[in-house]
Image (tube, rainbow, N blue to C red; front, top):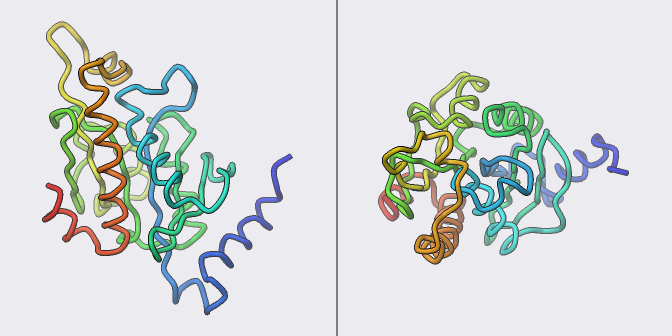
Length: 212
């Protein structure tokens, strides 16, 4: 049985505060990795955001994932910066529901929110930070922008390459990486996790200069 959400929420606020003042005095970052739930989607191009969140949880997580905000959350300490790692389980096109609930619950300002998602307009293994802008056709990002009513949302876009001739984009993003790409993607996920940690500590401008 899952713990009472109100009790869990109070505990997480206390964790974020660290018993040193109010939640407003100690900002917490919200880091969201996009993907689709279910075994059939594991390892697909569209789920690279989940992979990065998994690596962050492995390195920095403070416990097991918990069910909350229509997703899974992991408390994390990114080398001194408190963060909540959120993987929406709503399926990609409704990711904004999960993000909106978590953001509202913790009253997290836009500048403390980062979305990690795939981008088929970038070459495989290319990283690109943006501080704001349109969804670029990424359906999860599109729903987040719509529900939050703002394009001023930082995102780390991870290149998954363009569909080969004869493929449509919907089939392509749900396909798995090739054997030739697999090693490159493992290194990419590690590098992307490094980049997110830098964002949490130093902000979007530093990341755009360092990783774009």
